[in-house]
Length: 107
Ligand SMILES: [Zn+2]
Image 1 (cartoon, protein in one colour):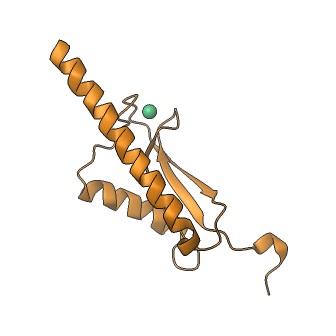
Image 2: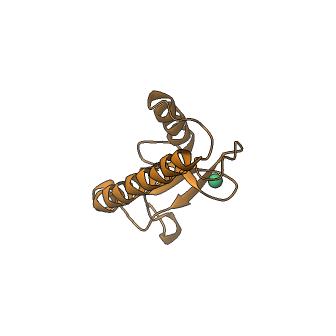
């Protein structure tokens, strides 16, 4: 029997630089995934995507995991918000890469 302090919430794990720029994040349901498995999933995904494991904004190499709770109780409830956040983050990444491209042309 669960108490009010044990209300199930969808968790988020972020892989962050010291300035809290997120390299990657993932949400998970603790019924199906442990926090350690979520961290391993992020590291595996970064390797699969061949993404450098440093911050693309401030170039820090010291990255860490940070765990938290979302406001969502189910992954189905979280999914549209996660997809929108992913879309915005992909756009931000494109903009950062484009700024680097422009800067390289001016040198
Ligand atoms: Zn950074």
